[in-house]
Structure formats: C-alpha cells, structure tokens
Length: 336
Image (tube, rainbow, N blue to C red; front, side, top):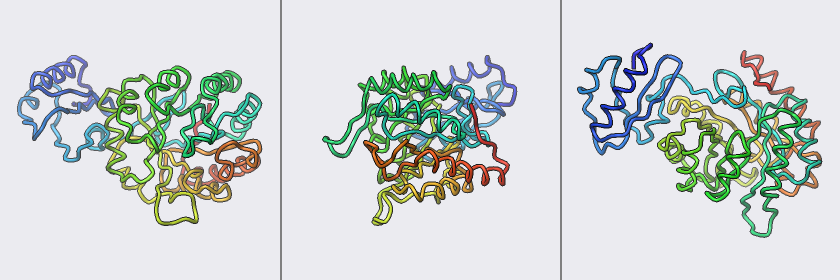
C-alpha cells in the first residue's frame, strides 16, 4: 500500500482479495502496510488490485514462505514485549536457568541477571528431554515461580510450550512463548501458537535447513500471529567438539530472506560455558538482535544443562563484553 493509505483503502483491498478466493494478511510497517496473499495455487493476476485506490504495487513472492519473507515487508519487524523492543537496531539479552528448580534458584537468578543488564528472564517450566528419566520441569509450579520472579524484578518472561496441551498454560503466564528445537515442525503446535495474541520465539530444529525453519515460522504467521522471533541455537553436524554447530554464518542471509528479528543461543550452540561469552559477542558483531544465555547460581548442581550454564560472575563478564561490541557498533542494549 502507498504510505499514508487509509484503513478504508486497506479494507477494500482485503475485501477484493477475499472475493478472488484468496486470504489476505495485512502486515503493518513503519513505511506503510503490506498485504500478503495466500491460498493461491499459481500466479495471482495483479491487475484487479492495481486499480484500487491506495495500492502502490503488487510484488510476486516466489518463495513458499510469503508472510515472513523480506519481500512482504522491506524493513525489519520489531517485536514489543513489556516496553522492550526486540529488533529496531537494539540488542536484547535473555538470560536465566535452563529449568526452574526452586523458588530460591529462580528468584536469585532473576535478580542477578537483571542487575547485570539482561532485560528478559528465561526459564523452563515444561522440559522436553531426550531421556524420559531426566528432570522434566516443575510444570505448573514452575510457571507460578516465573510469574513471581517477574513480579519481583519487573523482567518479562519467556518459557517453552512443549505441546498443544501446555500451550494455554504457558500463554497465560509468559510474555513470550518459546517453541523449542524439537518442536520446530510440530505443526499442530505451530498453528495453535499462531492463534495466540503473544509473541512466539521459534528455535531452529536440530537438523533443519533455513528454508524449513522459515516455513515453520510461516505456519505461525498464516494463522494470524506475525509476532515471531527466530532463534539460531546450533544444528547437529558431524562435529562432536561442541554440543551443536552454531551457524552464525546464516545471519546475513537470513537478513535478506526475512523481516523477522533473530536471536542467537550460544549456550545450546556450544554446550560449553567457556565458549558462550565469545559467541555472544560474535552474535552482536554479525548482526543478531539479541542472545539467549543460560545462567544458574551453581551450574555444577543444575538439574539440566549445567555444563553450558554460566554462574553469576561469568554472566556479568559476558555482559561487559557484549556491551563493548554493541557500543562499537552503536547498537544500544534493551533494558527494562
């Protein structure tokens, strides 16, 4: 649509798209509104739409992920969470334990990461684990403790929904719904998350291509939720030195392919606490919109992912390095 096109003009185009048998998806942007068209099985004739008042141009999108495609929205999207902007040239740090283990653990960690400069608290209440005998999380109790931590510190929270059944509980408690790597192609969960009014962070699958990852995001967008954050957390390769291979090299390409903000998870990407600060700084340098870091009061006693978790002192040092790189690039850190 043309800059300044009225809501009435937008509504007429949406109506015209519906009359053609397609589905319209308005995508607001800083420079104007784009309207994605889905439901077509072949090329869409642009002529009926070009005649409508307020229409600037019709752009064919060749890739199957239409709504998250950069062609649908030229400027990057910004996701707003409790006054924090993810994207828009700033850098957001999400930090906290892999799993919520107790009231003392989550409250002390929340205060420590806030004091060091993190702006969003992460913590798992429902934990999908490789082994059925591993700690599966405190579940509803964990959500209650996360809410208490938010009330105490003011930090918005992100936590994972592991299936359709837990999604309503997570959506009620969390400020951002996380969909983990193992669920990246859980299409029922993606569709259900697309019907939620809250932001969704979608982690890249264990062995997924970028195209598969963006198509998973499209499942969420197609149901009406465009508040999507991508999270690169490493993929499984032949290399065994690190837990996963953190694929920072895809970020410049992702910038060309999608308007969605991108977060990097160096904790899962390496599996080694000593490597996490270096990769966090690299994430800033390569253009990420933020990082997600695992922090625990005593990583040696963590019930999950202890080897990749930082203690409070290590996290403070990480934030010092992240600030230095972000400052050099004139990229402000988000804060509560």
